Image (cartoon, helix red, strand yellow):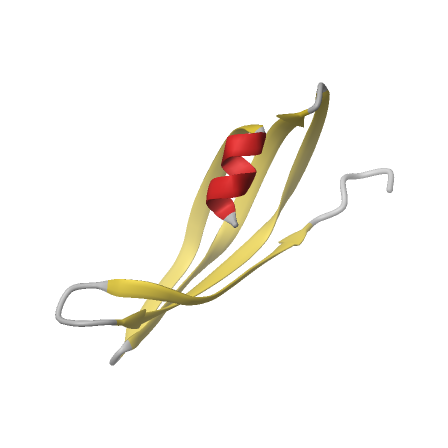
Length: 77
């Protein structure tokens, strides 16, 4: 998903992690993002929150098992 989106769009993405926790084989990271992307000559700016859940696979490898993000409406909407 991300590979295709990044290949089709010019993007400036900034991510700010706020909380990262681990318990056993599971971990999560949550925070905020801001993005400006251009596709087909149209530029869009957005910001929001994200959550990534990871599970340990092997000794030192973590894999994403769930992720989500929400857009925060800009003022005036």
